[in-house]
Image 1 (tube, helix red, strand yellow):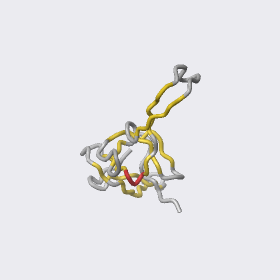
Image 2: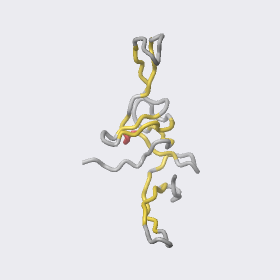
Image 3: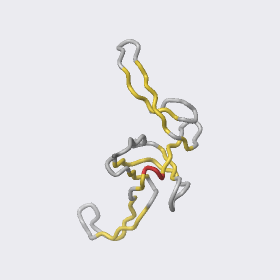
Image 4: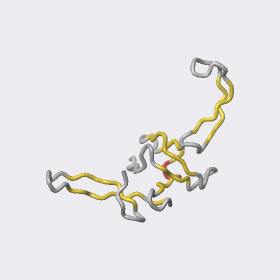
Length: 112
């Protein structure tokens, strides 16, 4: 059973557990099946590569590896502090259609 991941690509997050505890970065990719995210500048590992078309020289490349979504927390853009993400049902009065919006738990404001 997979739980719902509320963090999306381009969100700013802070690492709350592990070797990179306290680091902040932008989410580059979200893996919904394995509940992991790749965060810019976090969980860097060195990779030895042979020369290829993208890197004709070869050598050692640093790249970000995925970390579990439970180890990161969304950063509220207004307060610049970590916060949880809630959801709120919004009904359009003209059309009568409803949609779910992401909401910051600390400030109660809607997120993009």
